[in-house]
Length: 228
Image 1 (cartoon, rainbow, N blue to C red):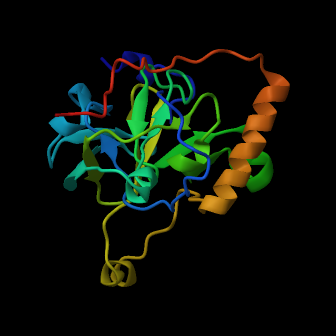
Image 2 (image 1 turned 90 degrees about the horizontal axis):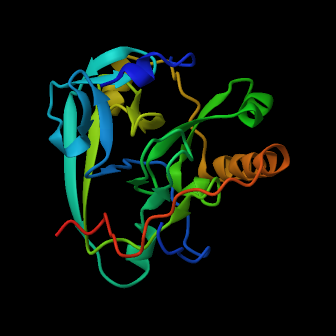
């Protein structure tokens, strides 16, 4: 089930919300139920995973899940709901074969020549909310009820979701862990401000070098976020 991904040469919407919705920093993040993750059992929905399951990571091959946090959000009207509004990523926007929804503070590993010119490395982790406007990515109104799943590993990892998109999963360690077992940062995790400036440059680069290709939009009659 993973042949398409393993054979890649580079292997290693809903209705718009107002632009006034504040961006948030990369934190715990979360993948919404229904999102497919690459595992030793093939593409599994994230809610079907359990501690001990092996997940395909970007840098370290198959790695076991050490923790799995689940949270159900029941939203209502008001600013809090708007701040927690998920990010809709259309098909192919980030090499994902299906549309996907993530929380605004979920880290996403992106690759771009723009990133390499600015940081000397083509990859960087950005909060999903900062991708607004890039290749059709947008914020969408939250569903009445959202189920979030956050997998954790022994160290920071990036996992494959919906075929080609890459989700950042920081490890869960306290200050004592860091003091006793220092870990070299292998991912360039950008702040909201730096990430947004970078994404704006990526949008400009897309407009200059590619044709305006339409992306799939989630039909209004289907609300994948309402899990009631």
